[in-house]
Length: 419
Image (cartoon, one colour):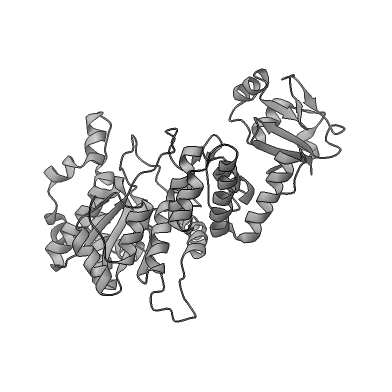
């Protein structure tokens, strides 16, 4: 890509690695250079928290606001009732309205840490939190078919990669899911009409949905609008960003402790450090590149810089400092640390004793008893820093008179205590 941007936002997107594709680089760049642009990203409310996989796009909205433009976080209170079929092999489980509302409440906590919604300070580019249920819930089906549905070609919809890949594998695609892309396109039309929103951003898997919205808005309102996508990130070892052995890396502290979040970034592979610093922190690009180029033991200090910067944004500076202190206590001094994930067992749960295999699973250090036994057999488990070799070990009240530290490998630890 040889385009040289004039606007601060496009410069940041390209320099830091956020940009995968854009419907019109020059047109968007000129719009960004000539005044405040309103842009949105949509989030379906499929869980009670966003996870690390969402963080790249949240950072894009943050940079948008930092460069003087107006971000909209669009909660999918309406579209979640249908479910996005993009690149899925099966239909999403349908959620009820109470669950959707609870999920939205959980997700909103995260956005407030990254964006300024400016309720009191009269910020000219204060972020907006909207819910597409506002216009989707009241749609009249026949009117919608006549006014909106007529602009969509089924032939073209079938050609989109997200749909095509499902059909090529002969996996069922329900009419309900097929409607999703029409509803998402309609969101862009409504946001343009109501809030003069001219840019939709999203992951590159959303390209087809974004283009649909642009096409619909041009047909119905004859307005010029734009789409911009970010790359779908995988780690250098090929794993999907935001997933780990323990499951999703949630952004809400009540679903994943700040220590475990910090540890996720501290455990980045060497090859990812420079790229992650550019994407997930606001550290100067030259410094990101310098840190990412370090080798040997020095790269570990760069990983701590990364973990501290990302955790500070998500959970605050105190949480980041506490996580680093705990990590140093655990790894450098062999201590226990104050901030480790903790499994608290009640007297009823403990009974006459509980198997170490069960405790390893309950503490989140293995997904199953089979995996826990394999960990022990391969000398990967330790109890209070001593090798754990007996998969049949039972812990009783005496063994848990004071908290014990369980470890899986060198980097994953948990405390086990009696409640």
